[in-house]
Length: 151
Image (cartoon, rainbow, N blue to C red; front, side, top):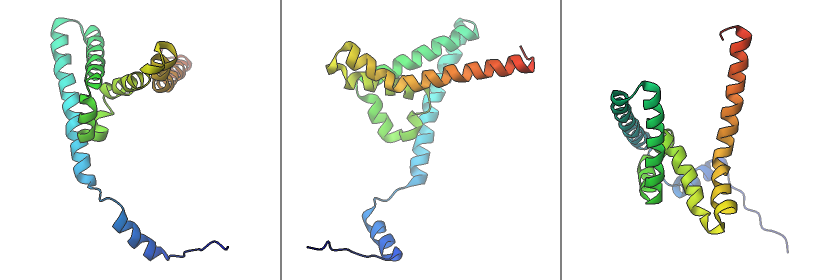
């Protein structure tokens, strides 16, 4: 039995897609992402100012990164970060808390497979490319600095 074909013009297809596709409010989504991401960054800046009053800036920056990672992991463990991400969307990805969320989510999702082959291995599915890129970029920047005589 021959297969039935259905032909549709470009304008008919566009009309079909317009009725079937969910409506996106890009402006509202961008505003939400900006506000949530901005709030995370503002909270980070407040923490940095507090830590800077206690220690020198290099120690304050390290303490800030560690604190934001810990907050991201804790909020992920309690399911709060996912709710925040459903509102703030991409605004929750950019700060370091988004990276912590990505790693913690993988760890939580695959913990049933065991500590080594599940939680730890899957965590590095996300972290691996970041570590490799960071290492490669630092080597390239180092070579550039040595070649140009800036070091």
